[in-house]
View (cartoon, rainbow, N blue to C red):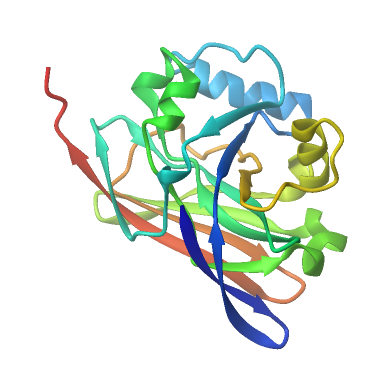
Length: 228
């Protein structure tokens, strides 16, 4: 699955085509166990069973990656989650922003299947991970949703609240320092404001306060009927 990014750095931008062969969603990736428990309780409120361990790594088909501005889902009970997205290409590591869009109704039956059921929207820009690694904890992820024609703040939090990419990668690979070329990983999310719920549009952002820059992507959600 080939995806093209604009790699942004202090010198400008250049295109990078990445052939993804592996996609991983890191779940329950908070550093603070109390925060993890809060997210577990959020999901329990909509019927999702507790995880067997934290963190967990869900493998997703790479053809679920999309940079489209409009996506289609089956049924009305789906929602997005903003996450930092790290990946490797040409021996170098990069970071962008993605949405772990999930089928909440199916999630009560199987978290793994619920994540596979929805595409994973991904921004078109990325930064070199080395450019932000020294102050990773200062980066902020945010999201907004459209409710009844109004844009509503949905998530916001620093990456300091989540496990670092190095920690997640080492746990996933069994001690490795980086992902293999063609592998991408979402790195966990932060709590929502007002409860997990569907929306007609989702906007996500990764903000770098030191450089005053952001990677942002928005997508609209078309709901397809559930046919029995």
